[in-house]
Length: 272
Image (cartoon, rainbow, N blue to C red; front, side, top):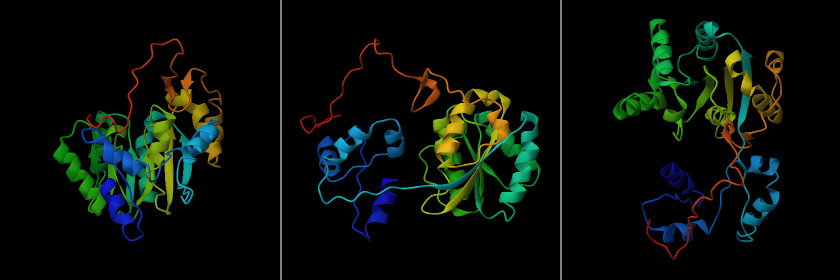
């Protein structure tokens, strides 16, 4: 990603910095002082962190420019039974991938599910590849290359395998299985509607996922999307003990819990 940003920024003089471990901190600190990126800034403001955000931005130079990125994604949520998913997926591919040339990314939850869905689609005549944790790295690299270059523009992926990948021009994301958290849902649908282009995210939601219905309804409402009546029937309640950022599967840290070790990041410590 850093290499792509570097190349993209050269014509306009925009610089970027990649911060990572295993190397000297000094140059990274110097680069960071010239700019700052706040990911999920809108969610920070929604949660009441406006003073903190303003404090951080107040440390930047007076001539700095504020930029914001926005994804234009139509979110469609469909409540259906587990046994109906295969036929419905094929029907959606006939709709969204009729040309068999545009990029469509199908998300599943587990590695075995990725293999099963891939086999099912191949038996039905679809050209498809998959990336998941049980595949060797060279196999994943090859599958991703085929998808990105357009030789096989239909791909099945798990959350872990796809996280952090730079996949351009994905027109449609289909959530065959709903993720474990709404944060992962947001990451998934963020694969489409990038770089000013429109995208579609079509999601299957089952009875087994009803514990996340309230969070999903909030996400849809905040984005101005249609909330289907079938989803509303599962309820709008959001569990109190969930993490505000990461959903029901991550609890907030107890105030009485042991304190974590503080790690400083300054120029006085130039070794990792």
